[in-house]
Each structure stands twice: as C-alpha cells, then as structure tokens.
Amino acid sequence: MRLGISTAHSVVEPSAASRLVAGTLVALYALITIVPLAWIVLTGLKTPPDSISYPPKILFTPSAEGYCNLFTTRSRQTPEYIAALPPAVDTCDQVARNANMVVAGPSNFVPRFVNSLIIAFGSTLLSVGFGVMAAYAFSRFKVPLKDDLLFFILSTRMMPPIAVAIPIYLMYRELGLSDTRLGMILLYSAVNVSLAVWLLKGFIDEIPREYEEAAMVDGYTRLQAFRKVVLPQATTGIVATAIFCLIFAWNEYAFAVLLTSGTAQTAPPFIPIIIGEGGQDWPAVAAGTTLFLIPILVFTILLRKHLLRGITFGAVRK
Amino acid sequence: MAIPSNLVNRVAQATPPVLATRMRGLSDRAIAWVFVGPTMLLLLAINIFPLIWTIKLSFTNYRANRPNANILDVGFDNYVSVLTDPDIWLAMQATAHFLFWTIFLQTLIGFTLAYLIDRKFRGHGFWTTVILIPMMLSPAVVGNFWAFLYQPQTGLFNYAVSFLTGVPPSSFEMIGSVKLAPWAIIIVDTWMWTPYVMLICLAGLRSIPDYIYEAAEVDRASTWRQFWAITLPMVLPFIMLAVLFRGIENFKMFDMVNLLTSGGPGSATELASITLKREAFEKWRTGYSSAFAIILFVAVFGLANIYVKALNHVKNR
Image 1 (tube, chains in turn purple, orange):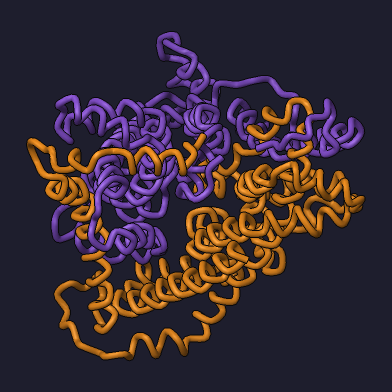
Image 2 (image 1 turned 180 degrees about the vertical axis):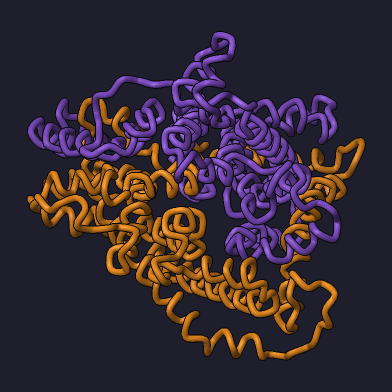
C-alpha cells in the first residue's frame, strides 16, 4: 500500500550502488549454495574411480556407469567367459563388460521409484480430498469447537515421527498393513491432511461467500454451490496444496525406513543403500539422487508464488 | 490479494437472512459434519488412537520383538528411568546445541539475505528461486549426499576448506571426529533451511509500508536508526514465527542426521529422535521408548504453546 506522496523517485528506493552490492552478495550466496547440488549431478556422470579421486575432478570424461549401475545388478565373470559372449546389446551391457561383469538383471530402483509415485499421489489425493471438504466446513459453517479442532489438527504435526512410528508399527503389524502401499498412503494422508486443511481454509476464506450465496439464490443447493462455484474458484489453492502434499510424501524418510522394507519401500530409504563392490557406489547413488530430485525442482519453480504460504501452514501470506 | 474486509462485511450484512433458511438437500449442519468427518476419522485412527496406545505402553515393560512375553504394569518406572538416564540428558544436550546454533545461524544469514533481496536489484526473483532449492529437497537424500561431500580424503567440502585455508584436506574429518560432527550437522541444516527463514523474513520486510520510511526520512532519521526503530521491530513477529517452525522441526530432527552421522561418532550427534529410534527399533524397549516419546511430545507441545503466547504478545505490542 502506497500513500499519496508520489515522487518519481521515492526516498525509500535503494540507491544504484546499494543495489549492486546487494545483488552481488545474493548471487554469490546462491552460487555457493547450489555447488553441492551441482556436484551431485556431476558425480552421477562419473566413473567410480573419478568420483573419489583427489583432487576432486571438475573436468572428466562423462560415463554412463553411474546410471547403468543404478538401473541394473551385475555379476563378476572371468574375462574368458565375457570374451565368449555375443556382442553387447546396449551401452550398459558394454559398460559392465569393460569392468569384467555382465548385467544380471534390473535393479530395485524402478520398483522403489514407482512405489514413491503411487504412495505420493495416493496420499495426496486422499489428504487434499478430505482437506478441501474439512476446510470448506471450517471456513463457512459454525462448527462446534472450531478453533480447538483446528488447533488439534495442527498439533498432530508436532509429534516426532519416530514417536508416532512406535504404535503405528504395532498397529500395522496387527492389521497386516506393514510394508504395504495402502498402509503408507493412509499414514502420509494423516500427516498431510493437517497441512491441507490449514492451507485450503486460507484459500477458501479468500473466496467471497457472496458467490455461493448468489448461486443458491439461483436455485443451487449448498453442495452444488460447493462443487460448481467454490471448487473452481479454489483451483489454484487446491493445486498448490496438492503439490505441497506431494513433496512431503515424496521426501519422507523416517516412516518409510521404519515401516517398509521391501514391497512398499520408497526411494528415500533405498537410494542411500545402493552398494557397489567395496563400499558405496557413489556415482549410482548420485544418479539416483539426481533422478529423485528433478521432480522437486520442477515443483519448486511451479510453486514459487505459494511457497511462503505452504511452508508456514498459511500463517504468512503475500 | 485479500478482499477488503469492510466491504465483505457490508455485503454480508446486506444479504437477506432469508437466504440462510432457503435450503434444499442437506442442511448446512449435516454438511458440516459430513465434511469434517473423514478428516477427523483419519486423524483419530492414525494419530489419536496410536497416541493413546503409546501412553498405555509407556506404563508397561512391553517389548515389540517379544509379543508373547508377559506384559507387566510398571507404573511410572519408565518415566523415572528416562528422566534419570544420563544418556537421555546427553541427547537432550546435543539437541539443544543443534537447535541453538541452527536457529542462530539461519536467522542471521536468512535475515541478511532477505534484507539484501529487498533492495530489489535486477534479477532478484531468479536468484531467490535458486536460493530456495535446498529446502525443498528430501532431508534424507541431502544427509546422504553430504556424507559424500564430507569424505575426509576426497570430499568436496574438505577440498574447499583446504583450498581456502591451506589446511591439508585429510587433516580433519567432519563426520568422524567427536568435535566436528556436531558442526557437520549444523552446517548441513543451515545450508538446507536458511532459505526458509529468508523467505519468511522477506515477507516481513515487504509488509512494512513505505510511508513509515518516508516519514522517518522527513524526520531525518539515519539509515542505522531506521533499521533499529522501524525495520527490526516490524519484522520481529515474522522472525519469531520462523524460529517457532524451525524449532519444532529441528527438535524432531531425524532423517538428515540419521543418514549423515547416524548419531555418531559415539553419541556426539545423537539427537533426541535418534536416541528414540535406537531405544524403540534397535533395543526394542517399547515401553521405555513410549515414555520417552510422550515426554518429548509434551516438551514440544508445552514449549510451542509458551512461545506462541510470547509471539502474540510481540505481535500485539
């Protein structure tokens, strides 16, 4: 909000010199902060010896070995055995043979990645679906003990995940939900629904009630008004909330590592345990990390405008 | 953009109350219940029921790896042994050290960055987005790849430090040394979460209307004085909010530290959540760890409540 004193150059506008200094410092920080990430992307393209060479190699010959090792399992063979094989069918085959190995089959990376996708989308659908309904009710109706309920919903986020995991572990063992996608979807939905309710309530509060009331004068029922007036108006908010839920479920590790071990394991507990011969296979880990982070980068750019709201549970809006 | 609230109020008052009673289909009351119901059921099943179960377990000697053993009611024994366990207090000390320094550094750097970005230089939108990236990443994956950067012989971090200071890169181990490991996790957390504090501070800075500065300028207040008298007090509630969220999150910290140091070396970086995980899922002392979990929850909840009171006090000042 600007008050009247309209000079072409307001006295509070920063000077050109201070802008230059500020711009340089911020750009410098941004570049430093992005180095670790860039390093991981580069490491994914190195050979294992290059990845742990000293001094660290900035210039190197790119290799597909990291990505090949990520997607395949290999077994060591004698040179004679390899020499007797027919020509390699693809790059990864060739890379493995150069190291005296043959590709034994696909690794677990793709199934783990697929688990991450299914669990992230499933839980997002559930928490945003439940969340938008509860948020509408909290925004528009007199719900008894409204403030207490909203605070209760928020407080469920204050529990350390490990503390929640103890009884969940026992409960899922009884119910047969241990290491199942359904179990993880329900768990992540419960964690995310608090965020969804708080964010969506903020978004729905911003839609004037008059829109629905006008629609109801025109003969819509409350539910029709909700579906045909409120939901379309809230689309941006719903999409932003959904992306926040997706990111949480995608990134989550504590529950995943304690409650899944095989069939429902997601990517975050899997990536750190990619082991090569003689220790961690850093290029493969880096390749997995890169593939895992790409969706997050895309989402961050899409969410720019709503980021602040999302990370503060709607407490701060621009 | 928010709708001017006085306008909304006027329109609302002008809306005939007849509307409210003109309903077909479900009544509003029924809709409210149907709409809030699923969320409440989900939270009851996945949060409240387990919480009650945890409270119940905390009074027993139950061990999850021996489901068929006799369960004895031990009263408050678990609580007493948690609170008198020197290892627990060491973990709380490590947590306090971690909390203090991460919040201090993130607030300092975050606020400075926000202040600089608020100079609105060309391209500030782009650089802000770049700075925000680390906080969106998976803490577990971050912890894992920083373990790679911290490798004593070959890691990029050690190389950068030796490049800047001349110390040989193999002369120190960030993760392997009891002295440095607590700082290793503080550095990673600060790298990851400074943008969070920055973003909230930036919103605070942008909420200060220009006319206040213009008035100060008319009064010939120095830039220094404007900063202390206007900028800082007006951003303070935002900083406090950021500290609250970071405080709660870092009190619960598990994933990043578990993958970076898994509490080691020894117990140098064994934060509360890591101890809890060891007790619950490695030593399988379910009753004992349930008591610890309840104590932690009460601590976060209590501290957060006191803090929110202070925050409201500052806001309404």
